Length: 385
Ligand SMILES: Nc1ncnc2c1ncn2[C@@H]1O[C@H](COP(=O)(O)OP(=O)(O)OP(=O)(O)O)[C@@H](O)[C@H]1O
Image (cartoon, rainbow, N blue to C red; front, side):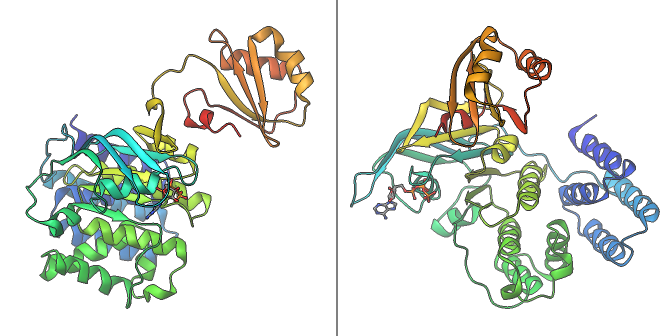
């Protein structure tokens, strides 16, 4: 089964299993992969119906299945080659005129459909790196090569293909739908395509009910969501996001990350993402690669690959039990070191110990646990204090 049909089958499963809202978002992603305005019109009328009939799940599923079949018949618009570096930065470094801070030298590469998480404590160079990749700052040394689908001719082109959303977003006037239509017009999307594209974007990003609302009345979390929506209409090849999760509640963080993952994997217009965040676990879950910066350098020479096995078992846990008892109960399980930061313990074991063995011992010794996590492969292990 090809990827397009595989995704349609997933959407169908979500609907059949009652995950209607997730199914709805993924259905729109598949509709967008067709690049077909007639399909978008159907999406709009289905969205409208859904909002007027929020409790009619039986007909919701039936309508979705009907639309899925039409999407399947139209098929994906094209499947571009995803095996290239859109950005390839080699040996780049940057120092500001004032102060001692120096970023790099370091290498970074970004591919379509891939997410790079940029983590590190405040002031360690995340924003500087994003601004270098965005072409806002010039590196003191090294090279940044861009390889877009089409060649770019000037700085404006570059800024269209490479969108940088800073921590403080631009203030907009007017309503949401009007703003999106304006963005699309600026990018040459006119007539009914413009209208249906703008509406589909609002439906996809969960902003349908606010389409006539004035931007100023959105909450700060929704403003970030809307900024992302507006950005996506510019059909970027790379999105560079500085702390996009900062004003969002936990649930909204998960939704936006899941959206980024799914949208970046578009068959028609895949894009790469670099996002900086303090939300380690959430970001690691969706990232293909993590860059951990400390004092402007990559830690442990590492672009940490998420799937790379670490040699040592490291656990983070919260328990009311004392360090001494933990030590005693786990001594025979290769416990090498305990670190306590006032809230959580971090336990470092030798490479032979498995998580399941330790969990079993916790159970058998009746050790009270409110939280435990295996962080052997997480950059959390570098944030010791
Ligand atoms: N224009 C500037 N001139 C001088 N120093 C700067 C300038 N911009 C940033 N810095 C310094 O460079 C260092 C790295 O800053 P940067 O904003 O890249 O870090 P960050 O990891 O994004 O931090 P945060 O999460 O707090 O934004 C800091 O010490 C900061 O004070």
